Image 1 (cartoon, one colour):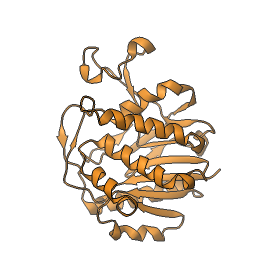
Image 2 (cartoon, one colour):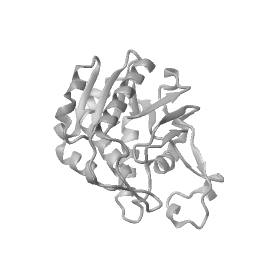
Image 3 (cartoon, helix red, strand yellow):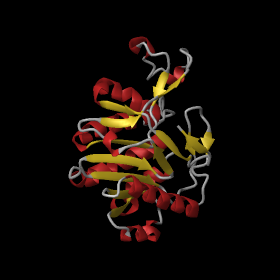
Image 4 (cartoon, helix red, strand yellow):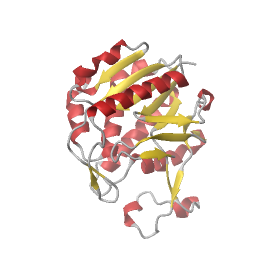
Length: 251
């Protein structure tokens, strides 16, 4: 089995803030460019420990990507700067205030650009920079499955209109509105089109001004309910620094 790890990164970030689901406007990064560089290097080292035989693609939206061509000298790692193969998209990713749109557009553009290369691998495994995973095994990535950490349930009031689009608790019988942790997930590359469609659905939602407060975490859970039989929920623990507020997170 040959795995492709895709590390998404923005080592050099713009000054445009993000806007969150509660309306809060926050600084795009709590870390300096040097700190983000070091965190990315650490993530690459972690992936090497997890799967010594994998190939890695570092997908980076930095404006000054020429400064990071050094990554191209790392064995079995390919550096894909958006600014080189899709400069117009890089500008959008770096200036949108919608975090979900930035990540989804980045992944969509990468898949469009490298689809044939991706399909040479058995599994596509995405990891955000700065994060590591506990209790994970390469055996968690099962043929024909989309593997992701088990969901987090949120006690949201029924009359909270911000969640009306995804509040299907009456239909499902669930007591909470759920979300997935999307810093780390992976899927059989035969499901690449399925993932691409989910990604497009998320983009469509967050580009609608009525719903642009939603995060990927809520929407990916909601849109995967149609084929939940292919979802492999795993008891992973995700650790890392939140890029926006700098807090250490453990899910």
